[in-house]
Image 1 (cartoon, helix red, strand yellow):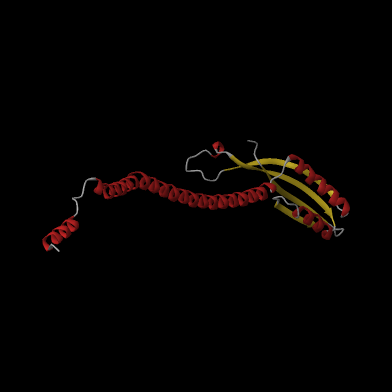
Image 2 (cartoon, rainbow, N blue to C red):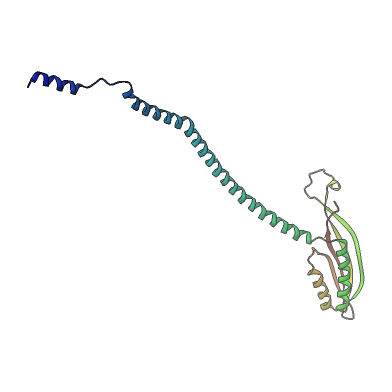
Length: 206
């Protein structure tokens, strides 16, 4: 065996052929695809994701604001309802012309029921009540009218317990009635004559 030819053949087999450009195409393509993916992610997808995150955060913030506003609206509605109830209660205290006439009827019918005699029943003058927040030197007559006081005067004769029943019926009305004057005198026949002046309130005509 020729040892020289054997060694030369083994050397040729182990050295191989030099690598060409096509041998590097695989890694180059892989790296290029990875770079393109990174570029697309950072310059296209990431801004979109960030925008979506901002929109979601803004949406939740708006929902929280809406919940807070709903709470404030509920509170305002409750306050308005309470004010309406208070307003209705106050307005019930005022009388209309019809209710003044009904008061006359109440006094007359109550006197009959309680065996009392109506000696006088008249409507007095109305008094305009104006705003009290007037400064020095301000003409009060120029201030707007808050309400009117309507005066009603009547004289009743009869037994004192029966007169108290009539007075109680008047006081039980759901109106603001003030007894401005009440003079009770006893007669020789052991009856009483009550001279009474009451006032009611009426809203001004706007």
